[in-house]
Image (cartoon, rainbow, N blue to C red; front, side, top):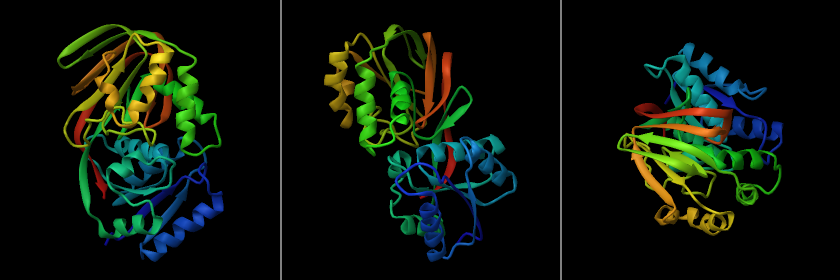
Length: 296
């Protein structure tokens, strides 16, 4: 049983009100008989700051209590504290709409059960990705996919369905880029609608954009679409629920340890569903194998 854990709780977003979320998490932590200290986020980026400080203070376990965005901030805070050696083990209490990485790690959605996993302390080492200085555990993308992120962030209703609605809305307002992609064993230059880069198979709760991706294979998977009309993309969208879209002749699928992209015009970048650059021209990805220790 861990002696003490630092829990970083995102009290914003989701279906529960702020105090309801605090009470729910505290009851679960107490039921699991954990010795914990709870820190509440106050603004975007605060979870990153709290996690970095917790790692510098040598907390043995730092827990992200929230959705994929909270998890990404905590992950970045832990890595920034010491990029060479992970000081603190990452714990997860899934409270988000999608919980893509938590699901890939087979973590329970029940909050009390998730807290019991923290007590059991079983760990797994996984890879993480890095793009333009931002770490990600699950997925990153340029082109249309981060535009979907922007659109769904503007929707405050519909639950998990808002990702689908945002995807349709974005596809109906088509945009394409001229890109040069260079990876371990290839180069592509031409028109590109999106590039989706995965350390895990699923993103957005339903979309298997990189269906062959595995958390510990030492590779980044990426899919890119080119030369598609809006109608073709709409027809292709349902196939992303199973990963069959990668068989389409206008979709390419690759695996690599690094990927560099030059985009014209500039493109936003998302990492684990969090937009962190709005106008990127040069984008550089790499995989960091066996980098993250997480409680499962």
